[in-house]
Length: 118
Picture (cartoon, rainbow, N blue to C red):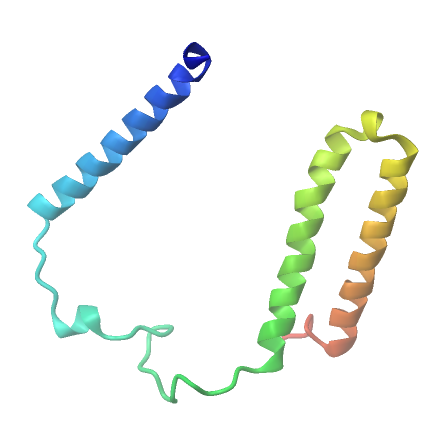
């Protein structure tokens, strides 16, 4: 059984070794001195103008929901399309129901104006 997993263990060992080597070289060769400019908070190229505890606009969350809708669609459609011949009619109906739910979410996003940029 170990013979089957040996190439994977070798790969993980080499990857961990290269990662540790590069981290070590970065600490040895790097300057390490951090000035105030490097440690300052960065927000889109300009200084923060409000408190960090301000409320976000609802459109931010709508865009996040929109991303989840399309991300889930791609994550589930590709494996389904690859195994379409084995899932049969039940898989086709299940995916149709899944896509219908995503379309309802997309319509909700559209009605709320998440697709319109000011």
